[in-house]
Length: 197
Image (cartoon, rainbow, N blue to C red; front, side, top):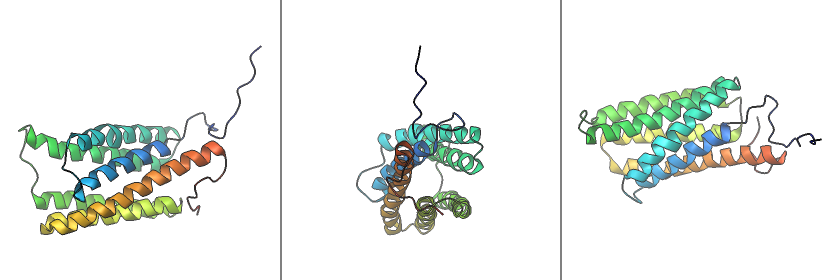
């Protein structure tokens, strides 16, 4: 006779694992690595593009699809959107190098980054119903997109360099929120605080 399965703190009531830690860690690590480049620590290279495709891109899309199964519209919208943001950003970099189409001008990139900043600002208002950790992630991401857009619009490399440091903070906060959610769920108690609303 087989003993009944032991229920752990990470067992979900609906039988579907929580995808938020995956999505947040995928977003956070990819954001940190790209912004190491923006801050001037190393060149734009295949490591960043590969992270953008596979972890920042595909892993977040997968997390968003799982959020849909959990009936979480905010998680679906955020994770799939930012997953496809990463995929589109890689495409903007790679397609011109392959000779498929001309690369975007600085003003076009400014528009691209500005619309993502506006979208992020609107999602920030949704985080006001969630927790302080997510509020910080979305607030710093809104600032990051604004700095990057202004940097491209003005051609000011110093602003983009500053954006790199701000982006490292944003990405690190997403990693923190993801790991906090995972550990708090696994241990069934607050291991890392997220500032519940």
